[in-house]
Length: 367
Image 1 (cartoon, rainbow, N blue to C red):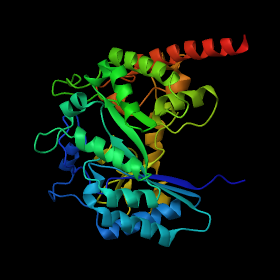
Image 2: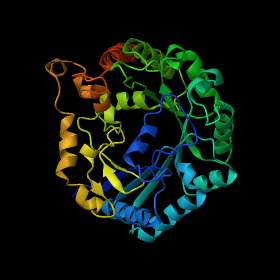
Image 3: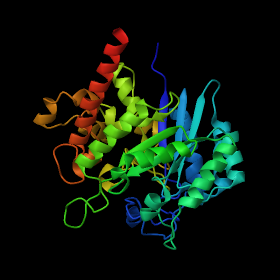
Image 4: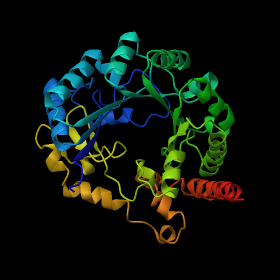
């Protein structure tokens, strides 16, 4: 039986533009790659090429993820056009999915009803309770955004939209895992993602808002305990993936995969890259207005990028945790010019800790 034809595309329709001014944002600086205009918006012709090519490249499954910057700056009409074009190019039996990652501040009931009608999975960025979230996640007027975000999360849930949360783990919330977890549970959302923050500063060291490996390791272990004690319908992406590895099941998260390059990143211009952490001239694969995604699937540069994760240090080769992380995220290897992941000790601590917990549970079950 032939392998299913699938494609996963992460799109930045508004490029690096955003209505917020989060202290730790790494993507707003990408505006320097597009000096020809101050406002970055995907043209209709580029959108039409992108949708047609995405649907053709994923004959069985085409997955579209809309991110930013802030994708809702495009307006609701843009996404209405997205689903119309997907319908026009859909083949019999083809599955199409859409996900929207947003800061949540620009949504309203019309947005929510549209997102529910067309089964968008909506990820909302929120860093914890108000005092934690508002410290770094402010708008252009330097005002905190927590109240607006939380109100719109509840509105989405009321309208029946499938919602998950994305929390950037930084120097502040990483030290209060219980407070953060309790807050996440209180939102009514059942699917959580925690992403560690590390960015290089001007002196080559990690910025002040980055989480240190030891604190992040403690955070992960405490969150694992809380997740284990939670109802069965609570999902934490890293821990779900960890369980999949233990059970020999496929994983979706880049960190737990042997190779990179599992999706395309498409900028508002149509430029294509292998990862949103590597929107760099070196890694430009092509442009959807010039080269179809079906051809870029076999790009030598895409293969080179995927292979780069397999180039690991001798220390990694001998590590018993290699089967879980395969050396970790390429960004976390290169951000401070290390030969291994900046969070190597964090994950090794989690893998060892979770094994102890899971082995103990298995022994109890057998006794």
